[in-house]
Image 1 (cartoon, rainbow, N blue to C red):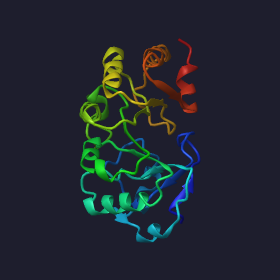
Image 2 (image 1 turned 90 degrees about the vertical axis):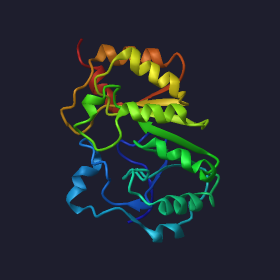
Image 3 (image 1 turned 135 degrees about the vertical axis):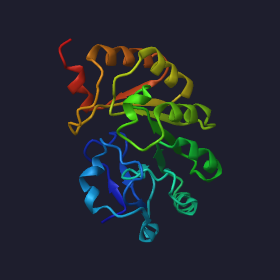
Length: 227
């Protein structure tokens, strides 16, 4: 199995490659995660030392840690530091780190490669909708952490989008000041409490006033619903 792979499937269209050096069962166990289909085969988190031998080249947009939240509590600091040290040998790539524990980003400001994007997932502003489907920090906690991050390039993923309060969610995103927002829907039929099409359209209209919106194809399932 390669460590660096061409991005495929429902991954972000603007990401060219994924890189997973820290692997294994994600501590958060999100109900909707695409990795759940491998749950019985996944071992505890581990560091794949062989990955450090690969030449990452240049000109790529690499999602680092696409199969596990490498920033989750319980992942050793020395693993993260070793991954960042390795990435800095290839400074001419853009690196995306996305975590539901963005509070941990603040301890690595000086170690991030120069072209780094820091992101988080905020499926909704309603903590109670998320509390039963993940062991990760709640959306309100992620928002607070992202808002206080001293980093120029930030992004937010609203995927899988769940029902929300329009004014509150828009205000959260505005305070985070992301470079862009990616919006997508559940692709795995997990019967999540989704918003109606009209509310999603209102959200997009409101966010477009102050940031770039990148709509994923899987959102069409919601947007095409008759209102």
